[in-house]
Length: 296
Image 1 (cartoon, rainbow, N blue to C red):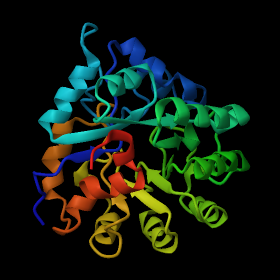
Image 2 (cartoon, one colour; image 1 turned 180 degrees about the horizontal axis):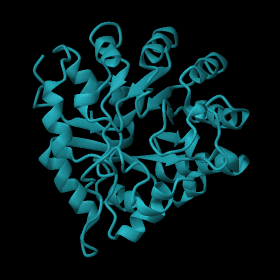
Image 3 (cartoon, rainbow, N blue to C red; image 1 turned 45 degrees about the vertical axis):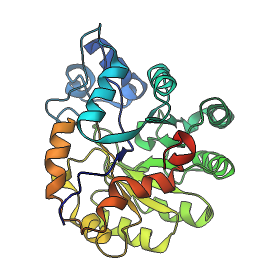
Image 4 (cartoon, one colour; image 1 turned 120 degrees about the vertical axis):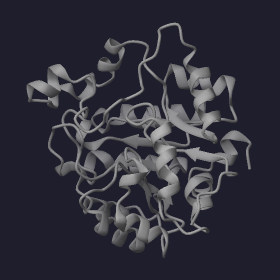
């Protein structure tokens, strides 16, 4: 069960640091209208700050953030990272096309504009997936809302996965849009869709496992969780029937240091045969990363 050290890790959620606290706070302005308590709305730099300590996401303004991230990746054996589509990630992919793949965050409330953005991002930047934060939309959008269905349809047409937050949301806002049972209807209506849950699915992890057993296109990413806190249901599933369904996904630098993640990882009790799939093979297959990077 020892974690191998000779695998080029694929991290499905890695970003770039901010160069000021003001820039960091502005990142979360898109859902700030949802925050009612004074601490979240005014005091926190990061709306889920009560859950995460020592967030490593602000650097000196003169920092070459692309090289900073590459150096961090190299230090921890991360060969390829998926990152959100923005000016920094476009520059990173230009400089290191074999190290970065891109994900487009979409807002279902934008209607056809969101659908057009998906096609444009695929054509111009070769995105390998899109993501939606249901609880973070203003107004909020349920995973199984009619507003989501055009996004699912276009993702099937573009042959890319949709990554969706599922489970209790971290920031202090209503969580009902991300109830895990909502995935069931989506998987039923879109049997060709590849759908990847993010941010834990808690407290419905047993239900998430049942749904993954049921639906071939449903997967689980470990984003926003220190490995020490991976749900037992998910570890057990990976070690039994779910070895092809669970993928490593970090939260650096948005919430967790790589030092913390890679110190915890060797203590996760995965079987020997699960590790290569968890750290690399599943991500390469599901997100078609070889096609985007030229790496096998």
